[in-house]
Length: 168
Image 1 (cartoon, one colour):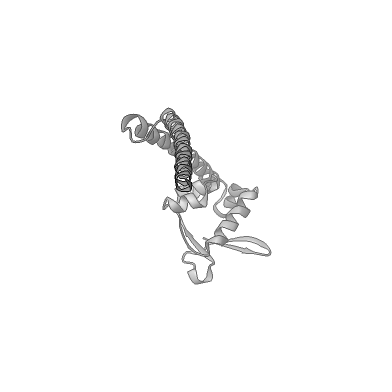
Image 2 (tube, rainbow, N blue to C red):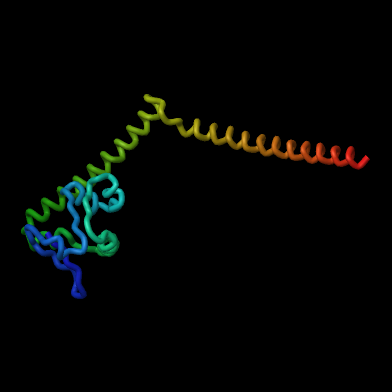
């Protein structure tokens, strides 16, 4: 599918093999990634996760995404014009479910991995351990500052005494 932006609006064109040379940006994605995009997931996170392939002038895609996210588009209605009412409704419902499932699964996986790394593998410190470590580091920083100040006073005192000895 080719998406064409011009002064008259946005046009969706069905092309089996569009010429990349005629496009500002080429995006390759699967249905799951499309659902994530429509669900509001950021393009950058999909790119870094390797779920979205983009070639060309990527800033065009970012601007188009910002534009489309600000619009209230009836995607299901537009799909119905192309596919018919029932297929468009089924596809829209499927994408919504897939998006909810993906977001829920991602959140659960993130929580499970975090819990495993803290509780089971003990590779990461817990929040309490972070707080204790931060407090200890703050105390160490204060103690180091005090030692540094004492050392500076001692150096000044030694210098003062040397000058008194040379003066006498």
